[in-house]
Amino acid sequence: MTDSPAATGRIFPRVFGRALPIVDRAEGATIWDVSGRAYLDAAGGAVVVNIGHGRRSVAEAMAAQAAKVAYVHGTSFSSESLETYAAEVGALLPVDAPAIYPVSGGSEATETALKLVRAYHLARGEEERKVVIARWGSYHGNSLGALDLSGRRPLRRPYEAWLGRFRHVSAAYPYRAGDPGAHALGSTEELAAELERTIEAAGPGTVAAFVAEPIVGATLGSVAPPDGYWPAIADVCRRHGVLLVADEVMTGFGRTGRWFGMDHWGIRPDIVLAAKGATSGYWPFGFVAAAGHVFDAVARGGFVHGFTFSHSIVGAAVAREVLRILRDEDLVAASATKGERLLSLARQRLGAHPHVGDIRGRGLMVGIEFVAERETRVAFPRARRVTEAVVAAARERGVLVYSGTGSANGLDGDLILLGPPFVVTDDELEQIVEGIAGAIDVATR
Image (cartoon, rainbow, N blue to C red):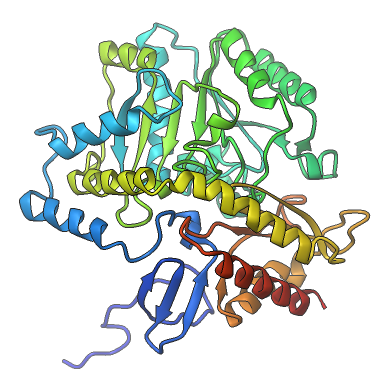
């Protein structure tokens, strides 16, 4: 029997109609394909890579653990790598007396957190607490539960028939506050009052949790809330017995110039989600960190949950080595310093561009939003596919960026997100901005 396209295996692509180069190797902030062409990884993949590509010590830690023991089921054994990592990362988390539940990534972390919220309230005899509130303009993952929680409308649209169990409040998005269709507010008072009204409308003792990103990443392009927002939101949640869940999948492990995004406001959530930078992309790994009072309640009542590849021994060994590098090389501080430099360069080079509406960011997570008109903030129509054109033109210039669409009204709205590795050099930051500037000129002419 001879092979035919119908009989041979092939890759199901992430995006149709795009011919992808074959990657060969990577080091620092640079990726090479098999033809020898170099690309500056200004996106850190999907804002994942923080310690840089090609770290031999991470590969050695991975190999050493795999050679010793690669897999056991989480119901049969714990391991030294897991126990040690939990202790080391716990000291850095913005959570009181944390206990971590290791998983394989951000979507699994969201699903785990949702079940954990429910298990907590059941253990306390509050069975009516089943309403979970999130925000429009948010992103919490692509599994069905995580997608339903998310407020990223372009991703929700094909699957709306299967969604609808969670409630949403406005995005904390000052740039688009009040714009038709944006579902955005810009003041702390309005945002906190809206959350309180939503909790009260759901009924006394029925709301289980409020879930949000400390700083919104891919959906809105590094949007920080207005001053005072997080203390006010935390107060609303506490007064109503609602668990505060911080999705730090993108903002964690130094990405915003602090260990975790909530550190900018000194807020201690009840539950924190982490992934991406936890292993800098070297292994699929994430976790949910539950505060002591959450863990204690669930430990009494039990937790019906689990994944085949949760509690990964190799994943914990990799995460521990990544954590060591972040600490020993002071890379969280580097993210803060280099992020200020990147933001400054972007504003100097692009701040007066007629189609750049806003440039914003914290640490090495910088968003650039494009508009048809600066004065009115009117977005390009989606049919123009401006984001896609910018991404393609930047790639032609050897710069990889992360894209976002739908920020203005759920359909229109174009932006890119920059999240290079924390080891990026000043010269590379300048190359990134110049490459993007040229790409924007081509895409918006």
